[in-house]
Length: 340
Image (cartoon, rainbow, N blue to C red):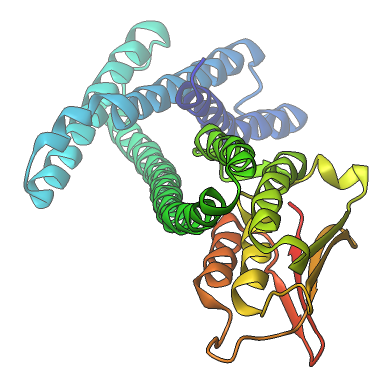
């Protein structure tokens, strides 16, 4: 059973009980005082008829206002739509009243049809107004929920587009740095260059395999990072030293793709790297986060943190995680990447 039919049955039942209870109370009071409603069989018949007539009338109004009025939505004018809706509700009102008067005369042997017609008009008008109000409120709730879902869908689509654009910024930048390193190796050591190419292929296989992912596991990112670190060590030799100490529990958690690689690349880009004064980088677990810290030997021509960290911070914001934390003093630069 659909939710609308559940609403029809539950509200129609509630209205029928609402209209019937006063008559039951009158009958009980009259029976106690031996009054005009003391004939139990007659009263039971009329109360049952009252209950069924209210229930049937409510169902009919609900059926129209939930389902039958849908073709009216094709009407371009809102004013015409409302007038037609009121007209058809009025038709239902008078048809039900006429039918109830006829049934009252034949089943209950009631001859005062004019009085009963007026009574049914007022009663059914009240039922119709309550049904119209209930359906109007439910339609507003449904429309509000539908609009909320559409807004969330659009927001999600916008987020996906922004994340794709941010990832697109990384790919050519990463490729340029790797090819620059490879160019130097080819001139000096062709054997190491072949190993370098193998690691480069591995990194791009990772990029292609995970291209559609917002986040990756720390284990997958670490495997990619180890290939990147190998390539950078081929370029800088002993001038670049890396220590990795991550707990096993953190390896199954998630992180934005390239998050760790961007922080390592940021350290290489903004610091002087030489064998005499090596860049020492640590990657450690710390309180549901990964901390990447390095000693500071800033290049004179470099300012700020560059596009990489701004990109990473924006991606964390779009995914909805905690923001990255950057701590810097005279000797140490540290980035804290929250795990998701």
